[in-house]
Amino acid sequence: GAGVSQSPSNKVTEKGKDVELRCDPISGHTALYWYRQSLGQGLEFLIYFQGNSAPDKSGLPSDRFSAERTGGSVSTLTIQRTQQEDSAVYLCASSFPGWPEAFFGQGTRLTVV
Amino acid sequence: AQSVTQLGSHVSVSEGALVLLRCNYSSSVPPYLFWYVQYPNQGLQLLLKYTSAATLVKGINGFEAEFKKSETSFHLTKPSAHMSDAAEYFCAVSDSSSASKIIFGSGTRLSIRP
Image (cartoon, rainbow over all chains, first blue to last red; front, side):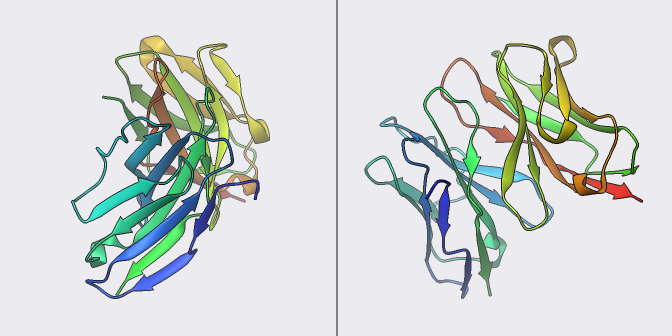
């Protein structure tokens, strides 16, 4: 597709389960970002991948959160042992080399019950 | 470290009135600055960006923003509000000297009164 694709669009999981969220960036975009948007809150930076450089993981809230990017394209955000406070919309974005702005996907709404 | 402060979590204006959404940034290097808009139940869309060219930047839907280095501000304005402008607006900053993450403010919800 032409835009950033995220799947699933909605995910309901039980407390304590692990979840994986997927992001397919726009073709050719070397930078990829994950953000978390909680109800009524702004966008909380989680992790940033740029090409082959080591990712900037400074925003990950705990060691239950991890992300990887395979082949410089698709990324997976994994949340282990989910807690109710993890409920939020997880947004992925990507950007093209030399372009400063990021293009966002529609997000994955995660609900932990 | 870079940061963004948006003054006012909620702004309400009358249709046809001036829209002013405030954003102040902190950056130790020349910044790139952005305004994004999020309509209800939709993703984020770039409204406009500042990348060290003209300090007055024009965006989509009649919005514009002015980069003022002396005030470390990048306020968003629109001369005449439309009902369709009701949305959440986010200011964001990144480091222009190297590829870096984009840091967002907490957002301002704009409501338009008929």
